[in-house]
Length: 116
Image (tube, rainbow, N blue to C red; front, side):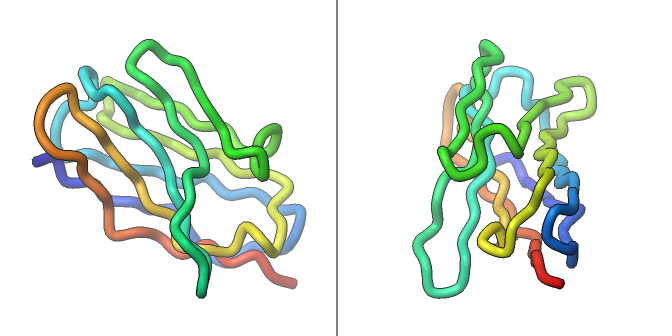
């Protein structure tokens, strides 16, 4: 099973930007789906953005136009560029990988806090 490690979280003011990275221990070239999820305190985990093997991207309504997901197959890394951050974006962000065969993987998460 591929191991995923997120980085790039932190404290940012409203309106600010962050870039999250998710480094995979193996190749992501054939991954069917790579995605970001988040979980805020007291809330269920939710999908934020996902990118399919064919390059198609999908976003939650709450982040569309502000977040961009991308993948670098050569570096086995997925990114989440976040801009115009709002306090309601505060959450632990998790990376997700669905391979072409085998079980899905999740990372340990990285905290994003949006506060003045």
